[in-house]
Length: 208
Image (tube, rainbow, N blue to C red; front, side, top):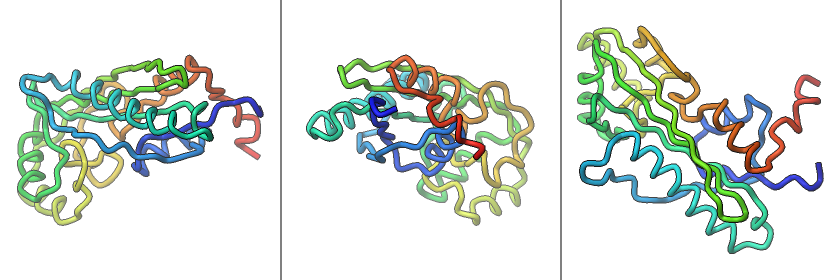
């Protein structure tokens, strides 16, 4: 389809890129959005996830609008927030943060909120929020120490990556697995389709 808009993924996450590729979508451009992700006072986890996804989409939309080549593009952004009750867990960067997260998650359920936003060339922004419930087994100190030693947790919401080694901690998941990884596929495809992006255009040759 020569008239199809280009797709911009407002993320540097290899996980989100891989998820898009899984459903036959290859972004034309990767433009990570640099925004302040600090939660506001009394902000709920679900509000934060949607605000950050929208904020990322809007920032990259502005960048696209300033370029003649990118002006007609559709911008896709997402953000994932892990919470225990109303407590928002950090995107762990330090060992102490990772240990705190794992200690909180051990033997109990938590929620993962993933916000998705699609910004159209018109400036309209469509959003969806996906909530997934995850329960971890009770972690031993050895479980936590060995996981921290792996380094896989670094930069991950809640201090873990479900698609990696931490998958062995998950007793139960209710909701969207890809949303926990970083991008809910049903909702993403729906938003892109509503924005006029031909989600299925590459499917005919996908198995070739």
